[in-house]
Image (cartoon, rainbow, N blue to C red; front, side):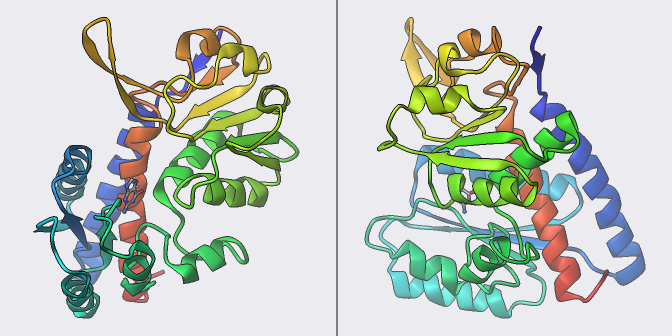
Length: 288
Ligand code: GUN
């Protein structure tokens, strides 16, 4: 029998804990953490994410500041807005929703956000800290995955972790976190030879490639823990479905534990964004 790791419940528990922390910050320090989210363009998936982020920010008692800019916004204007938010004392976290329109340099924008207000953990300072002393802000999706893994396993020391996908948002920071947790880590990707055999060695298999049902159950070691980061919208049997990067039914038949899609990694990502915002607000105010 596989354990279905309930990301929705884990995220609700994390938000409940954050709501208490936010209430303490207000009462003891007169501090209401503020999260500014910037969306450029009308990408439908991004619009849904941004709406959910704003709603949950308010639900835990924080302030949500939304900036929606047209798709033809000039890079200089976006950078000017970021400067304004960097200087605004009521803003403790800044998130620029990715992807950005192709005429805007994503790298430049990510690094224009003050690293003290970066809640994505994408700024070079935070990337550097994740890979050295581990003291910076950690990207939300891999942080959520790590929390679920620790909740399920406790100590991860010595486990064989295989991550399929090498993105800056998930694959690479996930590898850094699992290495910090004393796993033996392999990052596999589209050019990896014999991906199937490598996956079958994994005690922890993280799929983050953005390809619907790419990982079948035959690639999963019996008893392994499978973390499915994929959120892919597909048409099937005339219906619109959300599926992961893992073929859930065949993988659940062999895995010891697995995250479902939806209801696994997704909800934890937003809860971790709120967690990072509280962390940055406390740091900016010098609160332990
Ligand atoms: N687009 C998809 N995932 C993310 C994320 O974690 N942060 C930001 N800023 N944009 C995203």
